[in-house]
Length: 205
Image (tube, rainbow, N blue to C red; front, side, top):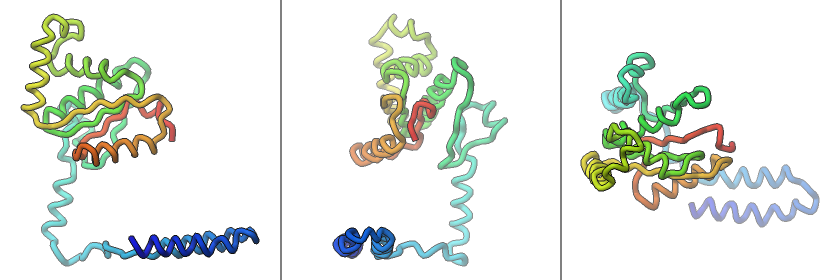
């Protein structure tokens, strides 16, 4: 890192000579050359070593994550780590409800879930999830707030996973989402197993 920093520093200083003549190609080459000053830690996969482990790694990553809906598992198959799953449908067809149900089910499996909403207030999302988890209507949650509070708290301790609901305004660029997730991991020390975004059309590229 030190060598890379110094190489870039030298390239920036030297590139000032080319600014006057507007030789931007030379500046670009200086920066590119400086960026190559680094140690390569990954030299590839040694084919003939740890054969059993590399085959097991593929098996562990492949198709062993349930969608939490038996019918979907049968139709589309189970998911792999790193998969991008998109729920698509017309307005009012239940995409958010599907996504929230999915998040609740993964949370019940002990997964760390990060739910990013660009539309609904996080407390409204949480109330929906309360109703889903307790199998109640949203209005009936208010019949006994103490029992709802206790049930959700106990569930958090029982399952062990974390569920965070984060509101980001419509039009938020993907770079801000990435920065937020990075900060979340560093600050909380928790790496999400599931990241749900509701919904993609409200993000800016």
